[in-house]
Amino acid sequence: MPAYDVIVVGLGGMGSATVHHLAARGHRVLGLERFGPGHDRGASHGGTRIIRQSYFEGPEYVPLLLRAYELWDRLATDSATDLITLTGGVMVGRPESRTVAGALASARQHGLEHELLDAAELRRRFPTTAPQPDEVALYEAKAGFVRPERTVRAQLGLAARHGADLRFGEPMESWAPDTGGGVRVRTAAGMYTAGQLVITPGPWAPELLAGLGVPVRIERQVQHWFRPRGGVTPFLADRHPVHIWEPAEGSQMYGFPAVDGPDGGVKIAFFRRGTLTTPDGLDTTVHPDEIAEMAAAAGRILPDLPGEWLRGEPCLYSTTPDEHFVIGRHPGHEAVTVACGFSGHGFKFVPVVGEIVADLATTGGTAHATGLFDPRRFLSGMIATNGGN
Image (cartoon, rainbow, N blue to C red):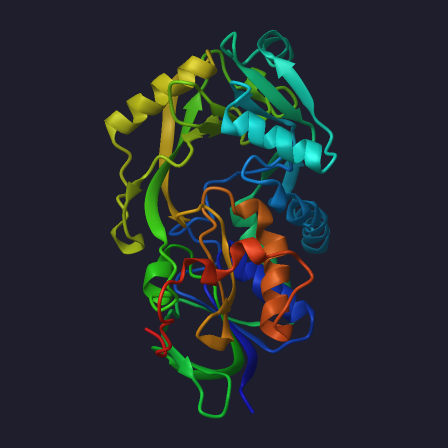
């Protein structure tokens, strides 16, 4: 009999959610993580992530978001941790922009509460903003932010409370089908067996899922924090919303209220404007030209920024060519479930992805609609069926 029902490799946002759901259902779970709990070497750090329902990336995501909101509230209650804050949010751009038109299409298709604001109304309601005359905003009261590091630690704490065996500083070295069924996983500490294997590799997807046939691009993205001119008061969470802004002349930007006190500043970053990297080769220095570019762009939409640059923090994006997630059984291995390619818009889905992956690993299916995320959509030719890495 295998030592575990399921082994989960990678305990960031999605992996920690998966071990939580599996352990809470009574399964024997082993979780393996190469770093410590809630580390800053992947994509689940930086203090805040936007959560929203009027989803410009596609209306197919909205049912998952509605379930995710339920699970966020449950996770916060069960862990007694402050994880989610609803501040309201604006998606800003020209009416035909993907940010506005896509969000509006999702809101209308699913009957989500929202308002359309012209430039004058956006400035009146949120004086921190400076839209162009031809820009509009979709306002969603149920948008806000979640806390990634707290979330990972909360999920790991609940998983451990339910009996999960969590091992940190112990990366997987290889995996292979077990001759008696299930899988074998090797680490520097030894060999483990389980009926099922879940791989949630984050930016290590190209390395750990080399035989999957999914082209995952790993990019370095930089998050910036500025102290506004005049201080953070106008940017507090009851006055300044989360926002995604698509200027006609430049890249999308996203930002947050001031949430970490008078010295915490205001966080803002470009959306999907990174450079290719590897997780082990990440440049952790934030360079002067990056600061200057972000400061100039921020000042065009938020006049009290940039003010004083406080700090920057690179993180890693793992993105598929179509920018949709990968969630499903490995096409070449029925005992392996994979979940990757979430970066740019994945963290808000953490608790529901954990639910989905736990379903797939234990029953082979899920009640959630996940066809959009099928790993097989990228396959051409023969599926690789060799063991592991």
